[in-house]
Image (cartoon, rainbow, N blue to C red; front, top):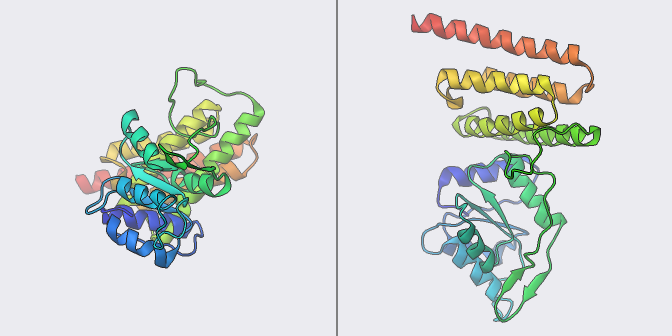
Length: 285
């Protein structure tokens, strides 16, 4: 649930593109609360701030059914994933105390959303009922598959281990495939997918640099540089974005040691960008 229609649609499209069957949306917490008994979902995605009943109130009302029986809450332990822009540690702790399982921070990528869904479904937490807390066990292990920018000074600048390199390429591949599926589900590239593609490219460049995959890094650098040149990713032509996603996919699917083949693919992208740049210059003249 989210009071922002574009965010709701984006979440729904990501889930459907990933093959999730029944996806139900509500614009605010009260409607979601009423729909809970009728739909009996496996997971709830909720925004923090919503009219009438916000995400914290919604979560607390669901968890409270564990001690005060409520026929409108079939499962008080249902996983709740909060989609929010709040990054303050104290606010995150407030949400955890309310009984939230996982968080997806805005702006998000398809892989980030789906990884949280996978986490609550495949690694369920024990549900705790106590005098001071109702909700999932909040103890957690370190996340070694993180694919975002550096968060700690201890994070390595480069990873040279073969196993880690392969794991990084697999992480990139999963995120790119999720992005491609979302574009198909939405009927092509639009403003929302372009903005999301920008974040995916940032993640891809970080991982490519960390494992010293020069062709992946060069391809993502080319797209990000072109986006900066034209005034932002939302101004990039769909052909350029889709070509980059396809080439990155081909590089990842090919032989990791085929530097010649990867370089040929990247040169093709750079030629496409030169043609687009020349066409823009002609139009501007």
